Length: 261
Image (tube, rainbow, N blue to C red):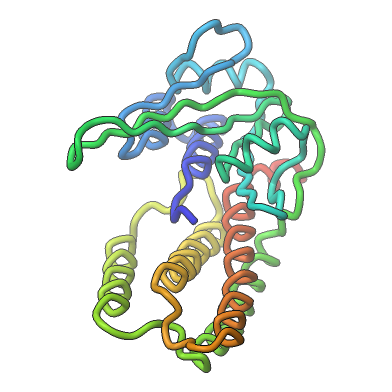
């Protein structure tokens, strides 16, 4: 799981722009982040890809009143509302943005170029028609916060019992790197202006939980030596990863949900 999905940056800063909290140029810079450039392809009224500033302005004129995030995974169409063609593209990318009020969605396609050590990333957002319907399986912020606490507690108990956090220098280095990332991220701007403190808190915890799940998944089988223990490890991680994704979507979408009440 990306600790900060590009769809999250686009939705968060796009929502801040829509509500007048930031300028178009500032929103575009924040969305691009460390990437080289972002363009939007297939925007109604445009025959060629356009830059983010123009695209965000055009989406507003087309009726977009807010941007929602989808973070689907196989068997879990989280945040999607159809049609099947859009859902399939979003599932392949594992993320998407849906424009509230405009029946349009954006799916990123990422390109990397350049020699090793000097790779730059370009992103093309494909603009496609979406179905205007309630998104799938998105919890409220309160539900997401409660689920995160419960899932993290349960998974920690299982993983500790099985000793699957890993051992040896590779796992220790991975844990140290995770802790360093957490320290560097402390105090950073997790969401764009205009989001409630609870959304910031939920997103920050969800990102850390997601990073821990990735850490556990990427470091072999740890101390789990039997097939049953490895199966138990997977059973423990899957619902935690699902809860973390749901919480991220709830946080990113919170301002749109709040305005719709």
